[in-house]
Image (tube, rainbow, N blue to C red; front, side, top):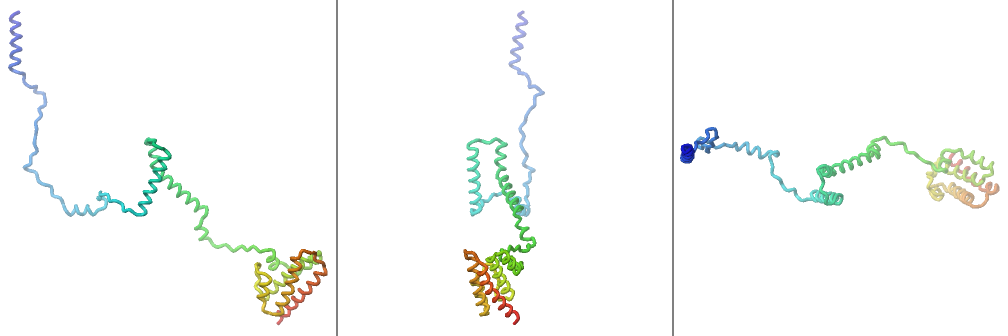
Length: 253
C-alpha cells in the first residue's frame, strides 16, 4: 500500500517538473514578411491615361446643373408631385410594391397624356384636313336667289295672278327685272344688297328712273300690311311693263 502511494506521488512530481511535449498534430503558425528586395515599381503609360481621361464614359465626376428656367421648372414639378404624393398617402410608409407603383406613376401619367393627345389628333385629323383635296364649295341659296337663278319667273307670275295672289305676282315681277338687269350687266346681283344699292349701280338715267318707280311699287305692295286688289296689281304691272320695254330697247342697241 505504501509502495503504491509513493509511485503515485512520484508520478505527479515528475509530471510537474517535466511538462508534456506539444502535440505534434497541432498546426504551428509562423509570421512571414514580404520580401522587398526583388520588387519593381509599376510603370503607367501616361498617353493611355490621358486618352482615358478624354473619353466621356470614364468621366465619373458629377457636375452641378446650371440654374435656368428648365431646372427651376423641373424642381417646381418635382415639388408639386411630392406634395401630391404626401397628400395622397400622408405619413404612410409604402412597402416595396407600393413604392414601385409610386415610382412609375409619373411615367404612367405622361404616357396617358401622350395617349390622350394622340387620340385627339386621330379624331380631329388636322393633317388629313390639310392634305386632302378641297371640296367643292357648297352654296346654299336663299329663296330669292333660288328664284332669280333657277326658276321660270314668267310662268310663276301667270300662276300667281291666276290664283289671285297679286302680292306674290308683284314679287315675281320685281325679281324678274333684277335678273334682266344682272344679265345686261347693269347691276351685279347679290342677295345682301338693297334696292338703293342697285339704283346707284345703274348708270343709264332712263333705266334708273324706271327702276326707281318699280322699286316703290314693290316695297309698297310687298311690305304693306293691306290686301292687294287686282286693280292695285294692274297699276303696278304697268310700271314693270315699261321697265321691261326699256330694257329690251337697251339690249337691241
